[in-house]
Length: 589
Image (tube, rainbow, N blue to C red; front, side, top):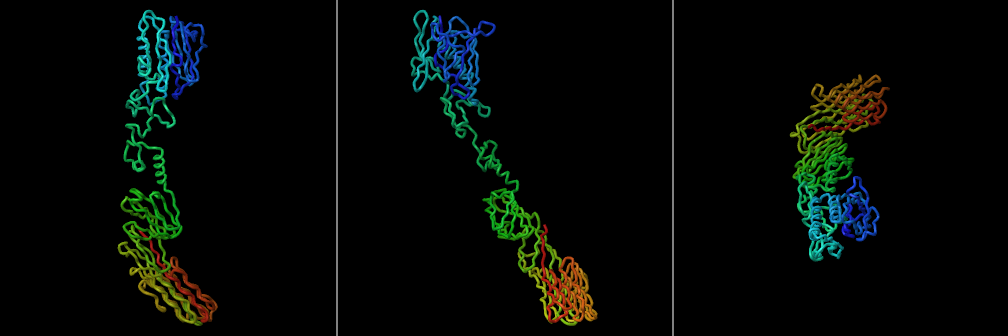
């Protein structure tokens, strides 16, 4: 007597991707020590042998397989994608269909790594086949299966053969057991559906959901959830939540990761270069802004920049008018200054990183910038011009240098800066006095006197301007140098901060040199119309040098700041002009 051990087309082999795959069934004698291949048959009469091993069709379905009912077999199931399963002691009464079903469910469970409970699925499959055997009774009746398929399901019809006595009632086998009608049977292809499997979410088994990560993949009988709609799934962080790190329970999408990395990149201090008016915005966070021209700088609102925003600004060689920070409508960043600006979402403040150094060579206004403790600097008056005369022509006196340092609280919000002009060049006349440089009412730097016929001009002093041959007081290193006398061609006297005296006109073919200074402007050289030698102007280490006196040519102008002009011994020629004044101011933190 033969028995049907595999129902034709009953259970397709399923690959790891949940799609049908080709497979083989290899039958061996289970009672020999070494596996010995045995022949199985395509008909109940055991007259048509199958090839060994038995091969499935392209959809993974095997033909009907019959074996002698009294033989035990070992069966090996192998798929083309590398799955394999072995079943021992298979006989005509063993539910090989249940084994194949369990193997397919095992493949499904392996492929769906989120789904657990494969053992449960196999147990359920075996229970189904056990029901079939039990349904047949103990009178030797063997079930004969046939596939019943429609658009809704595939089930197996059960008829009986080979037994003694009345045959059992025929029925229909589905995944939930044997029932009386095909319509009542559940699709035999899988135990899919809500509540039939588990997924592991963060280590906790949760019944009823199967996750899939590919929008294009489908699993027969399963409706996949997008992660964002999967019940109980953690939410994804917004951009603000990702940047501020306010929660440890939110997930980061690739977009959020890229946004965070972009923010980290900003913290590497990119450099911006601007030559026109500019407004700093949130994306300038962490940047260093440098300018290549004097510009006006503004900022987005504090709330627009966001709490924790910061940026550096360097003035370089230029001036930047800063608007809307530090509680001020505006202030000026002067050359050399570097500031760190920081916002807290409510206001914007700055800290001086490097102080400024500003030089005024023309009159203007100093606008006090915030963040400084003191302001220091030096001021020079204007140098006097030399004389134009055919006899004893004196050089112009140099201007004083006034050093200063004031606490920031003493300096006004804005201070007028007046830069002195040097004495103008003259022809056939005595030299002109240099003007005074002032810094508000806080500093006055006096100018040098113009040269005179017969004597040099006096240098400017700390407390007064030079006048004629008299130096401005006091009579110490801060006083101006006296002008050189006439006749003998005396040199102007030297000083430290005061202006050097102008050189005197000389007789006997010589004239006096201008006086020297360390900080003040030096005096201009004298001239003698009947002579044959020029007289040198004085020198200054930090101020301007005096101009050379010329016996028969145009006198040489003094150099800035504060140098006296040289005389000329030809009354038809112009004397050297005195140099302009200057103010240098620096911020001290």
